[in-house]
Image (tube, one colour):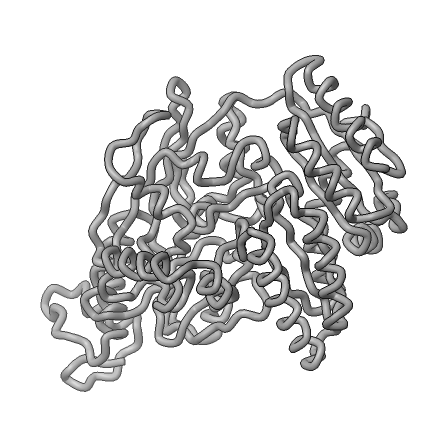
Length: 489
């Protein structure tokens, strides 16, 4: 790095020169240098990282099997104004920007690309306000989901979306991927909780989208468009999120099935007449993996485990749970019972959340995220087993059964490239299966890098053209997370 007078200066020296009024800024040799100089004018030294030993920490998200390039720097803005200044410089010099939150994504959406600047919002963690009367919170994007839930919980309110990664995923990432969770079968996904957003555009302009009211249809739903856009349209610097009263303690109903198809049919029947607050499923392989990882007393010989909860108030919760139990029994559950012990119920839900950590210890893993119509859930789960056999891989299927959202995860021996190749073929076969059954290639993790091919096949030509036009309108120079999420961009 250097200035036009050929001085070879480190980043700290450039920043020092920028802050010396006797010298002023006389232009940098490369676009990257120019952007770094602009960042140095608004950010503290500690919030700019160019050290090649530290950059790999921010190079990729939690996904496996996704590509990652080499960024030239990572910056950590702490305010909307700083994000705006960084984006103005990146836009002027046509430098690609990869927005990043906690890095817990599972599709490569926040992976670096070669020559990119990573804008990481992990230090933007403040809860700005909680409006008790109108039932919403305004927060910066870097706060973890659980932290926000705890914060509003102390005020007697509840934020519903609860991804399995809630303890280490950020609200900004939840917005970018339209994250769901275990409660979304009743309360919806992140988009259903977003009232408004503050967004920094590709050129650095700042806009407030959405509303403060529960209802509102003025103009296009631009806030809704940003939700799930994976950082390709703008950088979210504030989210206004709908809150609810804290629900009553749930009543839990559990069923063990000898056959995954029967479990899927039970789920379909439950959702025809009831609205549980949770309806999760684990296949036999997932049950065994969790029990091996941490002994919890699960029946490792079971074909499937279904966990349902009702948070209806007072006796209504018991009535709904009992109705779920009757459906379990009608669908030939080997065992079905209502858990009277809150600790046991929490243990069962914890077992479901523990599947991914368990699989991570077993080998190289490749996690899918498909969604199918609920009445095709049983067929999907049976055919996933067929895919496992056809490609000679181990697939562990679990997920949000009430939404038809499954997370079939392939595990192969570490470092076995031949098995990894078969895993990718099986991964793509499951994406094709989801679309064939009238579903989608991603229910909540996003397209990122892993599923762009599948997205192109899921959308028709007109929809693909609309995506390209929208991307161009929001980001005409194509600098925001290029190569991610959007087909043919």
